[in-house]
Image (tube, rainbow, N blue to C red; front, side, top):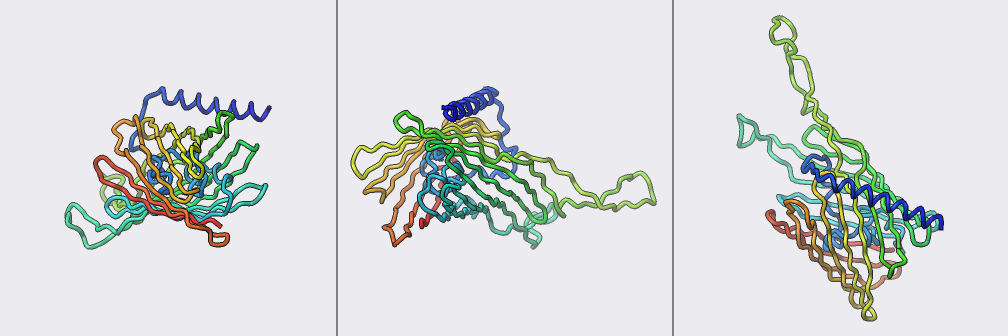
Length: 342
């Protein structure tokens, strides 16, 4: 009884806090660092419109809601790749390991990569012949455990780095999630807070300049080494609250519906909707959803996807998934991935 009261009080505080923040109506669009941390991971979750916080029952839970990894029945390895615009790729790889009553552990890495770019200047707008590269990375360690039979808590601790040419910014962050199976028709209630961490500041040799501190004085050293100081930016903090329920209308078939509300610190509030239809005893999956409902000037919308779960090969099985995202002005985005269970 005391644990139930604690859970309900914690959820009340989270909902109240998010409501007060929603009421402010202030957005800071485009003012955070590490924006790649906001890009969805995994074709299954993406196909369901990103409404995955309250489902989170595979290895991609390390991104969406770290509490969910303790729902896994087997160890899993996940790899996904999203082909973004202008040759930008977002890759995610991770592994989750069961540890009995101790809980469940996971390791993950996110990498956004792109092709080399030619250096241009005011005097050489067509290019100087030199090239530079840019990339963004995050490495995380995840832990989750059941506190009661129906309540799970988990966290993902990560190191984040962004680099461009000879300069880089880095920081540390944590994602914290909870999942609760309510007594109301098996509805799952989940909350998560993502990317709570340090501010990031770009530093490096590209910011090195030659400076004359006193241009009106002759005979002094007019070429002192100095650095431009850049601003410090927060990471894309995001609070999410979601609900999900499974429906079993026909034997061997399952329909899961989910809804999620999100409050980011760099945009307006929005909702995600998603569903998954599992056919032939969890063998074939059809998915659909809608992202960023009610967001101001939203770019994302319809999401679709499908998946296939292979027959078991001894202790091994494989999930192969695909998702499609429709962007209003930028075009379509495709994500591929697989999860190996063993």
